Amino acid sequence: MLSGAQPTADSYHLGNYFGAFKQWVALQDEFEAFYFVPDLHAVTVEYDPALLRERTYVAAAQFLAAGVDPDRSALFVQSHVPEHAQLAWVLGGITGFGEASRMTQFKDKSVKGGQDLSSVGLFTYPILMAADILLYQADKVPVGEDQRQHVELTRNLAQRFNHRFGETFTVPEPHIVKATAKIYDLQDPTSKMSGSNQSHAGVVDLTDTPKQVAKKLRSAVTDSGTEIAFDPVAKPGISNLLSIYSALTGDPVETVVAEFEGRQYGHLKVALGDLLAEFVGAFGDRTRELLDDRGELDRILAQGATQAREVAATTLDLVYERSGFVRGIRP
Ligand code: TRP
Image 1 (tube, rainbow, N blue to C red):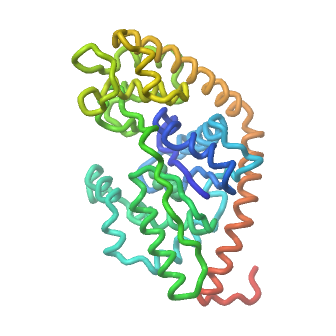
Image 2: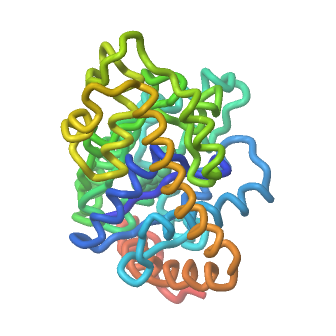
């Protein structure tokens, strides 16, 4: 199994934690897992090199703080494993221009940024993602709904390559994370919590201080009426708060609703504010501890890259063989 999350913000947020990282951690028991920071993907839009380097470290530290265990799973940085870029090139040769043009995320992003500003790298981004997945012969790829189409493309490319050049790749399945853990923006509870949301007031970052969290919670949008009930259509704000509460405590939403029966919105906000402040406080402490020892972090990432390369190099070797590249004496 393999997954990654782009280091495009200064920190991941609560939605990433409950939508992805918690599942990653749980899946380590069941699968041989590969988790990576897709830094090559991050250079497909305009960016600042110093910031990318720092964000890559923060990303790795936050994966670890969430519970990714480097002794059980390979935790690595994409650019440390050159096979990703090498396989992406070969896959580019069997990807149709029209096929790539149908990727809705590229269409969305290029519309937002303006066609002329979009890079070729942003266009071929899904092909690199296919390489990420196929190098490790992944059976399962835990991703959010927004990445489903990219996994679908990956399946098509794997099947196409296998068909043309002989059985080489495992055809992966997307493992779409269940809706129970969906976290919405505190200011706009009808849209997903996302680092790219216009305002950051409704996004709880994993680096927020307990004080910042308390403030965001206080100003969280609630709904008309007074009753605390789980009804995402009629009461998206309160339902989101209930979901977060449930995710943090591990109690089912019904239990949380029962707990707050007859009480007011303000009670829920205060109780959740306390819980969240405690959570981000502890998470932040763990992250800072890891970031304070870059030598140790580098060592963990090097160990992960070594593990990853063993698998990636074997796959790439087979791909080069099947592709008809001369395999004589290589430097
Ligand atoms: N595209 C994913 C995102 O935006 C990150 C990613 C890159 C990824 N390569 C991947 C996810 C391979 C799963 C598998 O977060």
